[in-house]
Image (cartoon, rainbow, N blue to C red; front, side):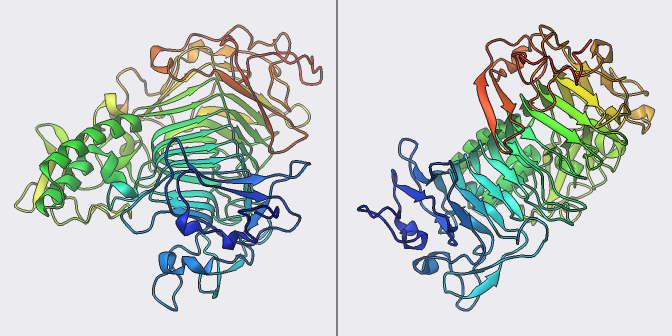
Length: 587
């Protein structure tokens, strides 16, 4: 659009979003003035011919800007996205770029958004003031604080790539709910984007990315600072089965987490086997599902729960610095209810952590929540029933399985009855099902921000967090662990009451800095070179065969290249040509 050629449109609002078809591409060319218009992707492409919206940069590489400030909405969309006359549509105030199927029980698939600077539901980057926009009827409203630069629901096979995303309540928000199969976001790729200044200054409830769904890959992204303020949200918050987070750079997220991998909520009846059984039972009883459909649903649930039991975080550059450094950069498990917590293994390998501060402390990882080890290992606080020595999920037949509010007491029964059925054993009541972190070949570098005094780094937050150090992990400070005691009855079979870090003796103890601070590359002669251990068979399908290098002079930019070998500890294989004498050459 905007070139004067055939097929051009004078504005984004002139594009017939409601009738795009497979293979259609909308090119938005850079101009000095931002496009104050919203984008809606409402129809599906195909795997071979996706529907694509792409920005065309200028000669200096500047991306076209799509802003929510005073944005207008295509009037022809009103019959599709509008609700009752005189009322704001349920989602018109939630996304500058919105990917959603209409009608309610359909799904958008095979769409791609790339090469745009999407911004502006919030004013600037120093306040939480919401901008205004005009809906499809031309009426003026303010954006909701939950608005996203990109918002999607009822979508699958979506690619969000090579965009700059800033100054929104959420950078990207994906919603997955349990109404039916079409409401689960599946196969999402978030790649090569530059996120910064998203969230709210005085809230920890809005994030740079908030992703719900199944099969989500987050790679090659540059996560710059979250919105300036006293609380701030996370860089990457997920409620996902099948998460891969690799080759990203994460800057500080003050008073929050850089990576927060927690329990599924609104779509939990698709993931947790006992909740899945409840949903299928109810749908069969309502004659809204056939026996054949139930068999297919069972097979899909088996696959999704297996994905939920493994999350992969590797090849990332993770940077904590200054007095605003987060105290818990990586969190996994749950934050609201232990009932549906992330089980199984967080695979943490070939990452480089750099913690630069003169005081304070941080914990590298933790698995659980502030409510304590009773939630993690002991009886659930909700009403559940031991059947034959096992913890079973027993719920009321009248329960609305689409309820995603996290409150369970209204539907869980104390015993089987005429209206309360046993949905089967809950698979998180034995040590084999407890969540744990398995770590290989991570470089953990703790340095003073200035002078010689440096902050304290704990490997875990709580003594009951299970961290398995399986070799190749390098650290240049004394190994320390969380300080909250473990009750004897909650000790893992191979654990102890002092801490649950296994393999601490395998840590490679170093001194100084083995990396170039700005780029994270290993130094010549670094301790990291030729010290990596072989990865286990479970990781052979996801080897860290790429690397990213940060350019400190160009925020938002990462250089991507192959890793020719896997001999070096950390996220980057090749040593820098710099000797970087000011940083030390390792021991």
